Image (cartoon, rainbow, N blue to C red):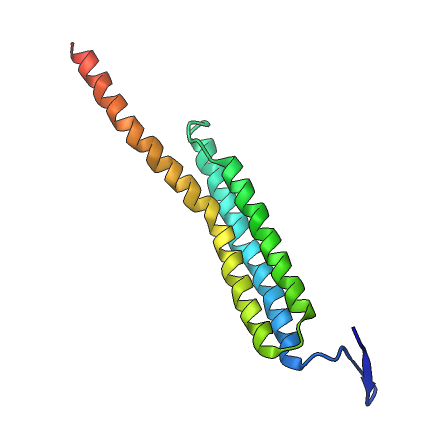
Length: 135
């Protein structure tokens, strides 16, 4: 990385729009973490606690998707740090935003799907219970 000094200012040699894209991407990742990931984890935890553990949260799948999502975001961020082309920087910023949001929302969707699947299994069980109690 080259550093240029001109008129008393230090510059990294990257166009200003690339640096702005980097700042925007970092802000988006922090915002997604604070405004989406933490509340989603809290919602899943409270749903699991309120059902006394009866809700089967797919923790393994959630962990794998979260790790893969973080690795993809880090790889894209490295590309953003390396590039000097504004168009590439903004495309990477947009992709980082999409991947971060999808990764953050996956636990909620996976837990909701697990709850729906459990609900589908509960209805026949309840029907059989009523039939057995009737006699």
